[in-house]
Image 1 (cartoon, one colour):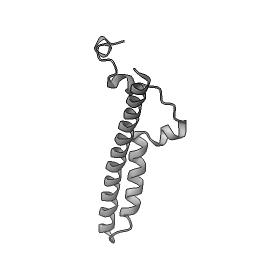
Image 2: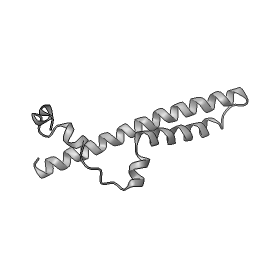
Image 3: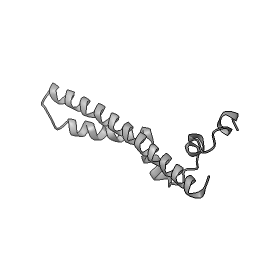
Length: 95
């Protein structure tokens, strides 16, 4: 183990590398890449409903970009929630 992490008991390292017990489908759909792809696809579909001709193309692109950003934000939020749950569990168990 890296000596830097040994000197920080209960630090982010222990929870960041805790085993992920979620099923494979959930892990795949909640990964940052999958969240960004799903967000981009949804944003593109929604953006495509607005405008006409070149305006519709622009709206589709803006919607896709916004969807990718929202998906990436959501993935970070989910990761932080998992970290907080791990820390809470470690406090409850007395680690």
